[in-house]
Length: 457
Image 1 (cartoon, rainbow, N blue to C red):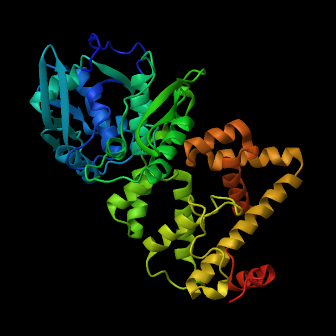
Image 2 (cartoon, rainbow, N blue to C red; image 1 turned 120 degrees about the vertical axis):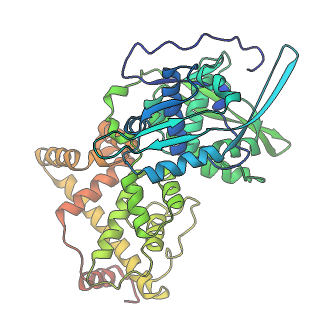
Image 3 (cartoon, rainbow, N blue to C red; image 1 turned 90 degrees about the horizontal axis):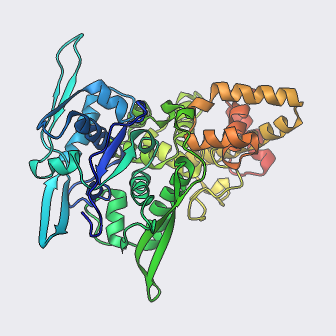
């Protein structure tokens, strides 16, 4: 318990049955692991287990649940128990430290996040169950906390990256505090907390801000309808030594029931497709957690089309090609005029004539230019359509694709339609695909390259 905080009574069940609220101990929100690593999915699973533990009560030393219910509450869409087991092992292997003080007593506890877990598969036609324990030293503080933050599983489940999930819970904790300021800690502490990693010993703040904090803040802004977060930097001289966050309430009410819950699901089938390409499981999950789902799907679709091609050389490494395509935007998720790397630097193939590339890289580059050109033509075609036909295209797009794209893009589309900067590219790419569904032959690509002045074919 922090100084100045007054214990509150245990939470009462939510008046709204559909709102699953977990009373999460404040010490368990900003977890800095001392050993092991935490992931987005392990955090979701942990919150779901904690929710059911609190419903079953602190007097129960062992908790039990149908596995299918846990999978649903953790917001992922697969009965892949091996993947579930791997995340449970992560939590068992993660060591955390809790410190409390008060009334002249200081107490330090080092413990696992999760104790013994058992999964029982009882045979065909009978439900699979999971039982779990918490380390005895922290069980009561987890299941019946004195100081806690209410975390809605629905909103927590919307977060697509681990840093955003952590910042959402931190924001929820300090939303009702008088100052609305989070804890102020050094950069290394925040790096460990926001990445869930225990092996960080040195941090370049510029990269932490660019690759972790800024992206997580943008995700909170797009997905959280209760508040936004502002980064506050504290300098010593010219060097930023410590940071904290200010919580700013949003005026509009949460529209939880209005969003399609299927968009908040951790799509293990998509992760499975990435693994099938040759990516390692951890790498596939990290990519899924840190990359826009629409961008992943578009790139995967591009790679699958490339694999089916009868005219291009066979890919030696589909996984390497996928990562390269994702980095360079072959799927057309970014507009042709946007930079292909977050740093603003050109990608290895950008800015060089096609003659300077290898044979396969040259074909990739020409195919990328061809797809971007086709997308721009689809945009021009849409603008020339009568209003009735434009409305028909928008309706078809919503019926065919809206349920498959990431929630921020879908929300932007509902708000602004084709005028949206982030949704327009997805729409125009879809329009190009249905207008010209045929795959380009080598002859078509050659003619395009010559017409664009791309040499080296």
